[in-house]
Length: 387
Image (cartoon, rainbow, N blue to C red; front, side, top):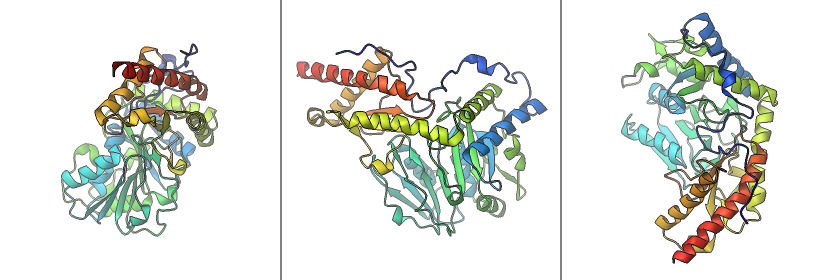
C-alpha cells in the first residue's frame, strides 16, 4: 500500500546536507553583510566559528584550527600540497574521495614514494599494512561507501609520519581521537548542514613543525600557503582568512554550532546520528530487498548510510539495469516529495544513500522507510511487467 504520512523534511542528501531542525532564513538576520571580513565584526564572527568548533569537538588547546577556502576539498588539498614530500606516503582508498586523494598524489604532486592501499566499496583495507614511518592519508568516514574506521587504535602513537584525515562526514557525528591525528579537515556543509565553499583544517603541533621546517619541491598557490618565510601565518587560525569568506555562510555556521550546543554538544550530536542509523538497521533486519553496503556493522557509517538491493531478481540483472532500477526508486521518492537526492554516488555500486547526520530527525527517517518499500515494489512490478 502507498503510505500517506510524509517526512516533515525530505532532505536526505549527503552534501550539502539538511539544515538543522527549525532552521529558517531568519537566523541569518545578524550576518555582517556589506562589511569587510577584516573589520572587527567580521573577524569576531570568524573567530567564533573556530572557538565554538574547538570546544564542541574537544580539540586540544595546543592544536590549531582555521577556516580555509574551497570546502573540505580545499582543506585536504592544502594539507597535501603543503606537507607531503618529506616522507613516503600511504593513501587508504576504500571509496571515491580517498581514491581521489591517491590520484592527486600520483598525477598532480607526482610523489615518487607512494603506496595506495585499496579496498572495495563497503569494506575497509587491511589497516595493519599501514606504515606509520610514512605520512598516511585517509578518510575517517567514506561518504560514498557508508564505511567508517571503527576507532583510532590502528594509528600508531609513536608514528614518525603524519596522520592526515579527511573527516568531513565524520566530525560532529563521530568521536575523533585527536591525539592520534595530525591534520583533520571538514566542511560546514556536512553534519551541521552549513553552506558550501568553506573548509576547516586542524593542525597538531607535529603538523605545524613540518610546515615550518619543510619546503615542498613544487610551487604553492596562494590559497594553499600557511607559512611565509618559514614562519606560520597564524592569523589563519584566528579568523583572518586567506580569501574573502561569505559572511552569510559564516552566520549560518554560527547558528549550526549554537544549535549543536543546545542538543548536548558532541555527545548529543552523536546520539542523534546513531539513532538514525538504528532506525535503518531495524528496518533492514526485516527487509526482503534491502541491505547495507557495509555488511560489517563495526565499520558501518551513521551519517552516509549506503544501502544495496539484495533481492535475487535485482541481482540477476546486469550492472546497467541494476543502476537504472535503483535510480527509479530514488526518482519515485523525489516525485512523491518524500526524499531528495538519495541515489548512490555515481562511482559507487547501484543502490541508495540516506544521510543520517545529526540535523536529520529520526522520525523523518522512520516515516521515509515505508515509502522505500513502496517504491521498490512499484519498480519491481513495472520491470517484471515490461519483461
